[in-house]
Amino acid sequence: MKKYLTILLIIVACSGDSESLGDDQDSGGDDNQINLTQYQIDVINYFKDIALGFEFGTASAITRKWKSPLKIFVGGKDSPALNLELNRIKDEINNLAKDGFKISIVNDSIASNYYIFFGSGQEYAQIYPNLANYVANNWGLFNIYWSSDNVLNYGHMYVDTQRANAQEQMHLLREELTQSLGLGKDSEKYPNSIFQSSWTQTTEYLPIDRELIRLLYHPEMKIGLNDIAVEELLIEILQNE
Image (cartoon, rainbow, N blue to C red; front, side, top):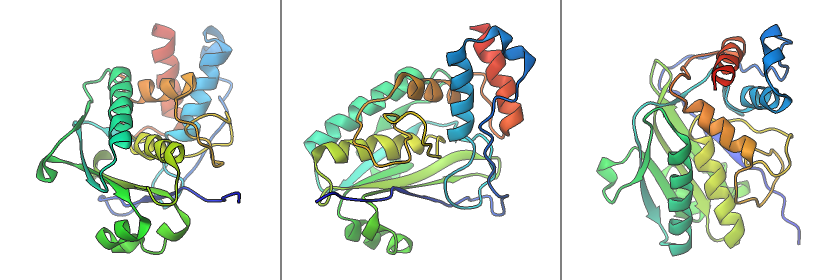
């Protein structure tokens, strides 16, 4: 039986009030892009599709990212396969980030700022009761929080190990953790992208996915940029490389 499910993103901002989302998928026709390849232009457009705001909620459509290390504590049902995959994803992200950001896995929950739960949706909802209405139709969820200056500082997610098969679990782990970096929106572009809005089972990043992670965690990337400002900065970064 074919399964239909929606991967739901729940966002809570520590900073309080925020604006409605916006999404500009156009390159804007900036003359500076004459020095860019078509692929670089596609990267800029996809970055603006994915990295500005979030799919749900009322967070403003600006760049956000972690400035401190992301320290993961894993709980729930022990899964050697998922732990191995988590380490693989961690290493891939760490190799792409060049601004000092790193992900690590810690054994003490007190030392963590990000919690990954492997188990059923019902068990996850027992820990986070406000998500009880969402787990029935979602095999993976993530929540991230940020400070008043839009710096990400805490988060949690779950992978349903009862309803999802092994490959689906690995896909969910990669998708939810990657979106927790501040790449929180989905898109219909690029069917095999980890940010694809339709249900997929991909367990690898496309080259363009890697570019989005690399550019968000580039030393020159700033927090709080809207679509116009981030386009200008991305053009500058790519032209100088």
